[in-house]
Each structure stands twice: as structure tokens, then as C-alpha cells.
Image (cartoon, rainbow, N blue to C red):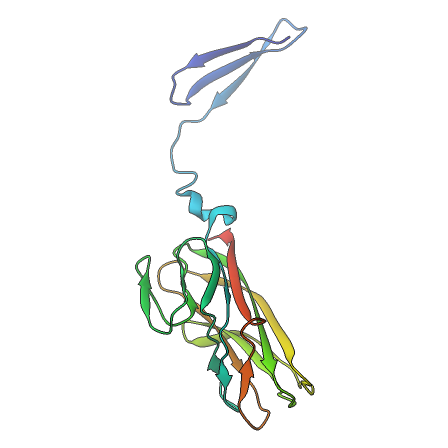
Length: 196
């Protein structure tokens, strides 16, 4: 059994001496003084940072117009950063437009959006994740005959500043007429994966 002798003050500075077994010498570990903040808040950890999952109500998407998908039913919203209403609200001091995620922790966020379109037309879909009003990630498909419906997905990593940035999910199609999203199979979600 080895013996541990501690010296120094209770603040964490000083010398920690560990007696090595089967020897006549000691090893000394000197801890530095605390000169800065290692962790400012637990919310900067990915495991405790903002995350949300919201499903969509049926959204009518006009032909050739990018339409905001109304993901208004929250399954969870860990830090109160997702606006599930059709109006602009203030969340954690951040102005969050309709159906947007406006996290209050700076970092890199992983987002996924799935849009399921009802109908039978070939819709030539585009899904977008907008950051502060402009598309930042997009995907496009030539489209297929929906024949009862089709789902499309987008995923990506976006840097957000934690003070004013927000993201939203948009969908556009070019079927020649309006199409409607399926409320039960359309969703938008995201979470902090690394602090800034």
C-alpha cells in the first residue's frame, strides 16, 4: 500500500507528495495556481447545451416559393431556445422569429430536417436551413413521382454566436401547383455538438 502525504493550502495550490511503493524516495506533483477560468458554464458542454426536436403542422408550399415549415410541436427544447409559434418572440434575450431555433450558447450545432410531402406529383424539392434569414445549407433533388408521399432530408453543421443567430427550415418545390407537408412525418431538430 502506498502512502499519500498532502501539503499546501485548501485552494488547490501547493505540493502533492506521493510516496512510491518499495522505494525510499518521494515523487512530487506541483499544481499550478488558478490563473483563469477553465469552464465558464456547464451549458458550454455539448451534453448540457441547447437541443430541440419539433414536428411540423401541415404546411402549404406554393409552387417555386421557399416556404417556412411550421414545425410548431416541441417534443423537447432543453434550454428554451426554440420558438414554436408563428410570431417573433424573445427567448433568453434573443429575438427569435417564427419557428426558429435561437440558442443562447455559442458553438457548433448539428441540424437535421425532414420534410414529407403529400401528393402524387413530381415535386423537384429543395430543403434549406436558413441562418438569420438566408439559406446556409441546402439540398436539391430532381424529384420523383410522389405516389402517396415522399420524404426528403437535410443535415449539416452550423456555427452560431449565442447572442443573435437563429436558424429555420424552409422547403421549396416546382411541381406546378401547391403541395402540403405531412404533419406527422415532418420535423426539425438540432443540438450543440461543440462549444465555440
